Length: 109
Image (cartoon, rainbow, N blue to C red; front, side, top):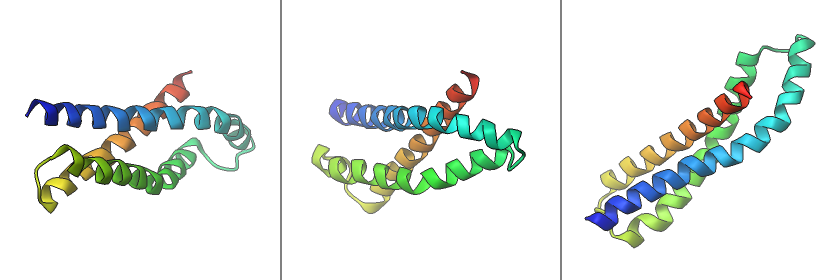
C-alpha cells in the first residue's frame, strides 16, 4: 500500500510540475504579443486567457492519458475501469491546475 500511495503522489507531482514547467516559458514568449494586441485593442486579456486554456486542454488530456496509461497498470493499482478513469480525471485536473498556476506566476512577474 505504501508503494501505491507513493506512486499516486509521484505521478500527481510529475503532472503538476511538468505542466507548469511547459507553460511558463511559452507564457513569457506570448506575453509580449498579448501586451501589444491589448494596447492596440484587438482583444482583452480575458479572451486571451480563455483561448490559451482551450488550446492547451487537448494537450493536457493527451499528456495525462499517456502518463497514466503507461504507468497505472505497471504499478499494480486497483484493476477496473472506474478506478483508472477516476485516476485519469484527477491527473487531467492537476494538469489544468498546474497550467493555471503557471499563468498566475506569469501574470504577477
